[in-house]
Image (cartoon, rainbow, N blue to C red; front, side, top):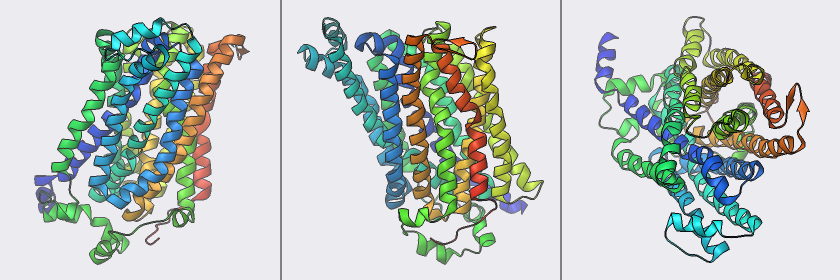
Length: 485
């Protein structure tokens, strides 16, 4: 066994793949955050956007992402991991760059000034008296750019989860998933320290171009690094045996693996299983919390505490720095329950997920404690973000635990679609709610105006995980491995 461990340690190609997945997820979240970190200080003044306008753009992105996820998983399963991931990152990088040209096209349509200068476009737009036209055209163009971005980004998690299933045994998957999923936190950490300052120095357009270009660099590396384990010359026989150790436990032969390599799964086959519904409902109820934090926390700090994007950079950084705790917790607790308590993979994950579901309740205290110091809600929101990422790593891993590898992309896509729909509802609804509470000066639970709106959304975030966990446990009360679909 020690000899096997030593020989496995010589290559560890699976951790190289995990690093690539981490970098892809980091770029993914950088792309998502450019708009949230630039709209309030740069884009809204230029195009006269309200919270509702931003909510529409953010919400429709989630909807586009949801619909795309349904097909992205099947797309990745059909093309397989290497080509599927290349297409995904290529499309989302193009989508990110397209945002930068929305101002130029808006200028041409509303002012008749088809300039190639970003500064010239801003000047032309500022001279237009018809504000509603500027809003309408700019929002439409940004929605199109978000559509392209969403189509590409939808392929990230199906491809990443599929690659994880191909390169890691079940006992390591939650840890591996938590590591590449940490790219979300790293992207979120880096974003407030870079994007607002790029936008301030060179214009918001350059922020989109610089971040979008990173995807093309990643593609160049992926082409040369990724191959399936059995075809990867960098994977020795010992590491391959380690990767495929579950096949002996589950009674799956190498012949069976080869015969299923090109097998396709239909949506009808997928939805026959309660495991699919459990995963989809869990994603629907909880994904929106993370997306709300990603899209609205900079606006929250500006609206409630009057901090612009550069002033709030340390606060946003701290939120995602705290969320990095999930790199440890996401893999430690399920592994503890499986190894020390001898629980099966599903029971161990569900036990850990119940623990993670408790912490978002703390977000109920964010608004009240914010009256003492802005740093208190920032810390609480960071804890909730860490709990979400720990939950997310494990809910993704339930798919690879219970479904055959050839179905992982399709099932992940279905869950991603459900999560995107939940995200659409919370982002679209938040924009409408925040404008309504601000305009009517609504009083609720001791809060007034837009602060009451944020408290209402925080209440939804607080209990989403416990509700999701309860439904998942009801649908799939115990571990049920699906070997054939």
